[in-house]
Amino acid sequence: MESLLGFLQDNGKVFLTVAVVLGSAWFLYKKKTRTSYKPRVCGVDYPRDVVMFHALRRDRLAPNLGHFCIKLETYLRINKIPYQFDGTSMPRPKEKVPWIEYNGVTMGDSQLIIQYLEEEFKVNLNAHLASKERAIAWAVQKWIEEFTYWLNVYTRWVIFNDDMFKIQSTCPKYMKIPLRRKVESMLHAVGVGRHSKEEVHAMMVNDLKQFSGILGGWKYIMGDRICDVDCAAFGILSQIRWCTPSACPGNALLQGDELRNVTDYMDRIRNEFWPDWGDIISKAT
Image 1: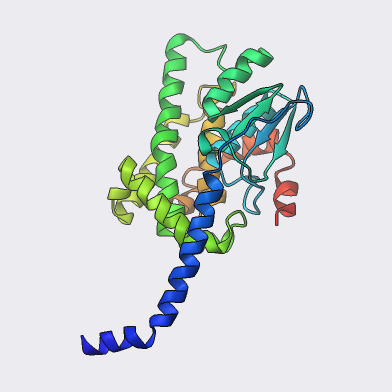
Image 2 (image 1 turned 180 degrees about the vertical axis):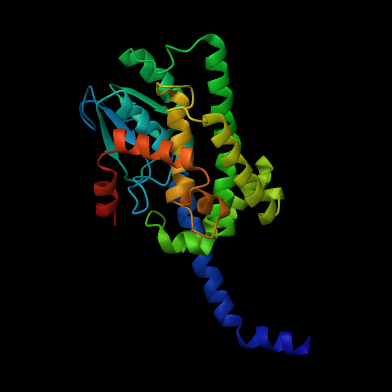
């Protein structure tokens, strides 16, 4: 005990300096993210008749580290909706990404945005599905978005936090500790954070195998035609396969041949709707 006290006394200034630096970084981060959103003027701050798609900035691992950002951008591409990407940080509605601006309308939440765009552009990827098929597709989508998503968040920003900050280019290094603490709080609230890392790894592997079973030999989740659920699934799975450290069992599973139908499915979507994928990530800083 005496040696411990002596160590603390000798290094007190160092600990104080570190605490001040981390505290200041966290304060600036919170201040920046809590800035109230003020609607911009269409035709002045952004062009008319083009969806201003706001997301996290481009990353060297994938066009975006945001699961729902990839989901929405894939949707925009499939439907050939004209959009302009904006990865700059600015106040946002609902304090999350992605969000859009379109002809005076500002909206957050990827699913609400998709519903709005369906009406505005008269598109519907689920139009060919029967009512029961739509319900099944919705159930699969919500499972992936509300469970598999959180498993990946836990994996990337808590379990492999150090490795994640080494391979990605979106989040600055000073955010490592503040981001981890914030994510841990969120994960504990939703329940996933109460599990051990071994349990989370097992859950992730199980989710991927279950998804493989659902997909089977189909081209897309609901058959030969792509649907909304495929945008959501690609958004989540892309982060596990291309944007998660290789030490993650889920990532390892998608790097091998065991779930070949899943990786072929992902390659199919990327090749058809993201022909510029490689070009985008090569230009990310």
